[in-house]
Length: 115
Length: 112
Image (cartoon, rainbow over all chains, first blue to last red; front, side, top):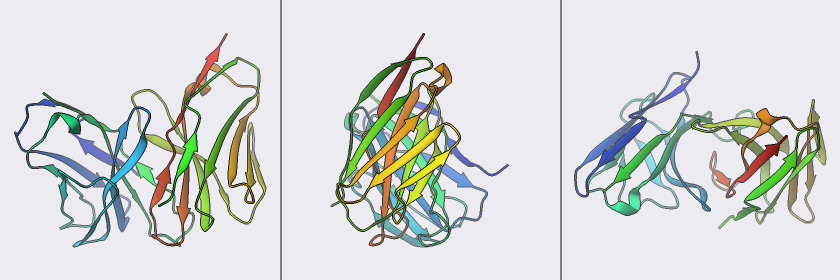
């Protein structure tokens, strides 16, 4: 089954404790992206990757890192989490822009609480 | 940068039609999308429209695009309780390949 898998789905952590949210897709998509969803703000892009070893900042990259060492994986790293990073995070993937409709496929989300 | 706006909440009675509206600022948008988010789940593509189209119909869903006013709407006919969800409008421009800019989402509540 074609899917985007995120882990963990739920996490409560404390300020400053490094954490990684993993994302894996099995559709051989070149493009992957991380979004955060906050009430009244919709989805905002954190980072994206056009292909292996190619990453770039989205609209709200501060406090986050990413890596793309393999095509299928795109982990989101919070080196020193702070309470304002409490949010619902989504990983998504697609074929590159210009290929078909550019539909994004989403994972089920990771709800992060930073105390 | 691009901006996509939606109203936050809509309540309709079961069996009525729902109309969810969206406005966007990027005139170079190529595709415009409607995504549905059910409680506790990720977003799923509901439908999309290419920018050279005015209307697209798919069963109970009708998408209308007014490029001049940069206005997109989603009409759901015969709304059911299973349609209760958050609906996101999104646009993809030609400038940043693959990036979708999302609206704030409209929470649709269907009452009996």
